[in-house]
Image (cartoon, rainbow, N blue to C red; front, top):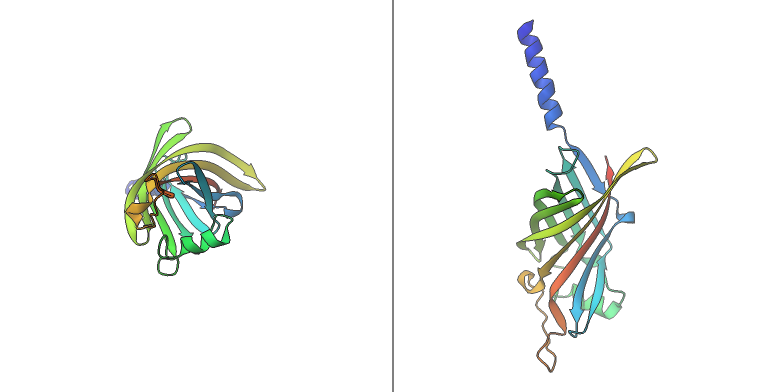
Length: 192
């Protein structure tokens, strides 16, 4: 009897410690945005409108969270049809051959009360490189019997490292489209 009770207690503790919470991105209240310099004097902002992702965590404070997300390349928009068409071609993303951008986190660390450092692997055009995102946690609320959490994450990548190769040059030697791309993610997550 004693042995059975001990096994049950150990089994219960193990199941509690292994329980994880899953959060799903709510695309109607989120955005995937990027900014890139144009003519070295201003910038162009673009968005991806179709994406999905999950965040799973065993701890309530998200310190050990794991993120998996995909973005549909064909959903890119800069609110200019000609430019969007060019971005989907081989000079940039080649949406036909490489239809998805993928992100998988490798580390999710709390650095202060509401700030996290997220490290992971970003795949564009089948090229995978490590990236670091700085994230600010907006909090958790309950609405309509659902829990929602919010994060804003930012980071910068070099587009040439991912094969986005178009590089026309200005008379002064600067690039028409900059090599550095700022990423801005505004995520609202729904607890499952």
